[in-house]
Length: 376
Image 1 (cartoon, rainbow, N blue to C red):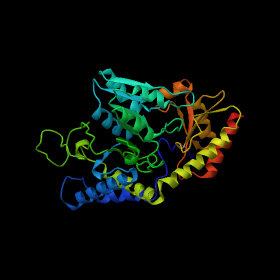
Image 2 (image 1 turned 90 degrees about the vertical axis):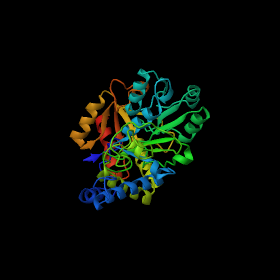
Image 3 (image 1 turned 30 degrees about the horizontal axis):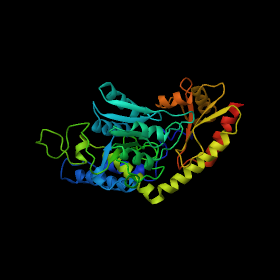
Image 4 (image 1 turned 45 degrees about the horizontal axis):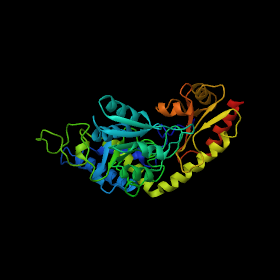
């Protein structure tokens, strides 16, 4: 099988991830729930992974790296922890439902919501975005679209948000581990990430980095292992946002993946994925009957290419690629309904190819040839 669905989850993980998970399952107890060896082992795993991710993302304090089950939970933690009825928020038409649905829910409860539209290439106007920011408490946006791969300028967004008194919440599910991010240098207030995509770690891992000074209400309340006699959730980070037992086994794997990324360099990963994406884009964009979506004049970008073949539904094309060519891709709406409306693909969806640093050039070329044969 040629696996080109890495924007959903990377199938091949970083070296050492599987071994780290297996070792943790043999040795790790419950972090912060005891002073015995197994509990201390789990605490060490969790702390080391926090420290590595703080370094990877430019988060100034390791205790402000909060662990969740995935980017969706991280975004819910950030959005509900900051916003409520009577507030005002701004987002974009590029967003995944992990951003849109919490914001819609808050809008139904009395929060004002502004959505910046996208054009037919999936781009937004920064001037149009700034015009909507006055009075907003937060700007919530993706770093890179999971559909087109178009990347937003986080430094510019942070400057616009802060100039208008808003905080910047970033969905980095598609870029964490694939495109360099330094939240301190860029001015990001809340950075939400998934562990199983570009970070090359296990499913069931993710989190958010919180800029020191940003105060969030807990999304969940429950066991913490400390201050057990208090009625409320302890307010110290990271305990404030981490009720319940952490996935120490998965975090061991995420820590191993972070080790590999720190040693390899996210810049090198980005260069590799950029080369693969360009190779595929240049091949398929020249095929008659193929429509490619997104703005490919700006690099780096997310390592995805979305397209459609004339006369074929995207799910029909995806089935043909897998059955006839052994190529795994993603078809449909990609949980990005507003962007599909902007691209004109709401009815048929789109066929998304996505790459990882472990994708081989031969696999990319085979996918180009398969698209060519289907188009013909």
